[in-house]
Image (cartoon, rainbow, N blue to C red; front, top):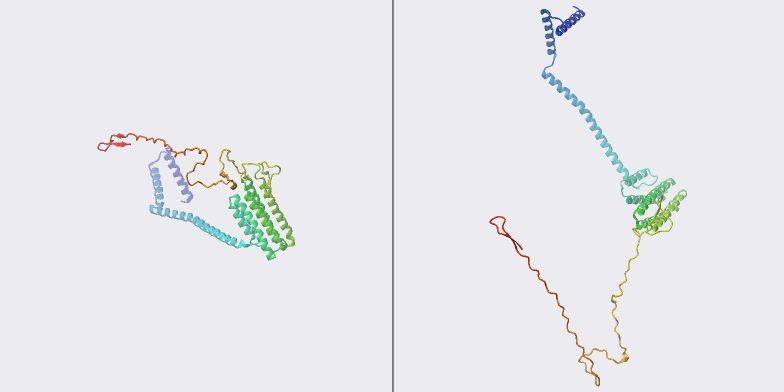
Length: 361
């Protein structure tokens, strides 16, 4: 029998078996036996092809192992990437620390000068107190003046002077602006006096360097000194207004708060207001602290001023002087002492039989 014929017969048998199951056709004995044999063969064929329990467990274990390996591979790659990233960060930090250390003495115009300025900016970012931040700006500005002095010794090009003076003015403006804002809010004549003295010193240092700097950079030196003179004038004007109700105009410029102009109405509550000391005169009824000067007898009177050593004898031919009774010693009567009677004794019977009573008093 060819394949198409066998397939048609098996299909017909399947349809008849379905009709028998549905009850639409009554089976013959031979046909029923044939169909049952067919079903049994199919069952045996399926059971024979199924793996046993040991084979199924082995397949299951192998699949689980491959899944575990597939999950472990990304984790290993993730750990490797993390280790490489950590090593890269450590290398960058090490190189950055070495670079910052090498750039400590860099001058304007040097390749490492930009890294030095970046380190100063990072230091400012890590400073959160406004007064400390202002001091750092002024410290950096003073460092620029020292670097300019070193540039004159090395005969640096004009561009290096321009860079140093520009950075000096930037730090100067930032430091003065922050410091004057603090003084305006919190007061502080001492801070203004220190800033004025500092500005005068930096102006003198720049004045000594002008003659040795290139001719093209001297105008920049003069501009920096003019800015320092403005700082001195600003500190003086603000200092004179700290005791007033109106200290500033409410506006600001590159040096911070602008001092107010006009009459100063003193504010006694200002921390910089100096009040005159209070002097109190003693009452008129108080005795004088200076002892009275004894009246001296002029030497021409012939009166003996020495104290007598014996009893006085009545003068002859005259009336004896009256006898004045000498007061006896004064006795002070002390107030009678009052004695407070002691409180009465209080006896409490024992709380537990066999114990002595409790006596209070």
